[in-house]
Amino acid sequence: MAGSYYDLIGVSPTAPLDDIKKAFRALAQQYHPDRFGEEPDEVKRAAEQRMSEINAAYSAVRKMLGDGSG
Image 1 (tube, helix red, strand yellow):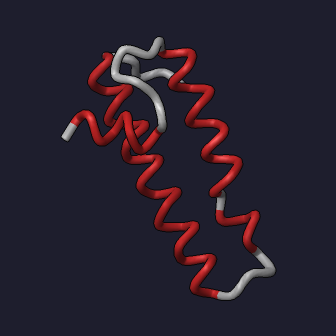
Image 2 (cartoon, rainbow, N blue to C red; image 1 turned 90 degrees about the horizontal axis):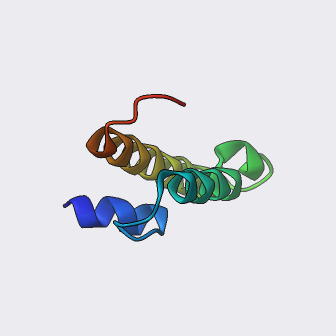
């Protein structure tokens, strides 16, 4: 399952932490639910779900790498 975390973030399992952080930030900007304020509820829910998946993957990857900082 670990590979899928990296896939969700869009980086290689061998990517350096800085690249992982950059990819996460880009995805967070793209999918943050606040960006969908004027969209229909189903679009907002989809963004919230995607952001939740991205956050979980990012947390899991950082935990695997032993990096608990922000």
